[in-house]
Length: 234
Image (tube, rainbow, N blue to C red):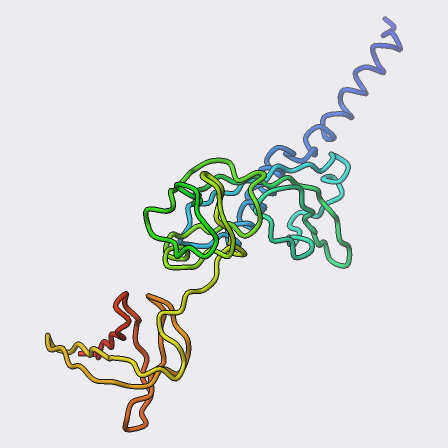
């Protein structure tokens, strides 16, 4: 009995195809691993004391991904300080660099004017309010911590709901270099008052270096009353 040539060819093709199918890499898993590493790449760029969450969308083509080695070294191209937008990730495979386009999104909280503020105003806690949402389209230099805003002087007017950025704030020094300052030393429940000379400018909650009358130099924290609190080790 003769076996049709077509059937023989189909059987041979199926047999030869089995090893090829088995050798195809698990592409989704490879992409997931790359995605995890991209997310980790952004983590160190976010300040620990903020609630900003950044996510990366990989825009690379299948051809670009197929050209990558198994464990490329990843880094962001350039020195772009934007929290969101399109960026390029450099994937290094030995002596060869691959350039992968990505889109970065971010969610977080920032501070806006609670009412119209005039230029020259010293910002008080009631002058600002916290909002949360998508950071896409927000201006560069957003300030995410209230203690970096309160007590600062506005360089220009700000309308209700407008975000506060670093370029709008002027450091309001509570104590200035060369000024005689009051020291409060706390040790074993005792409070000892003395004086010294400030060696640098400092705002409230800043660390101030102070030279004592005996020439010794110590560091203390500036409080709202303009005193410098010194905590001695027990």
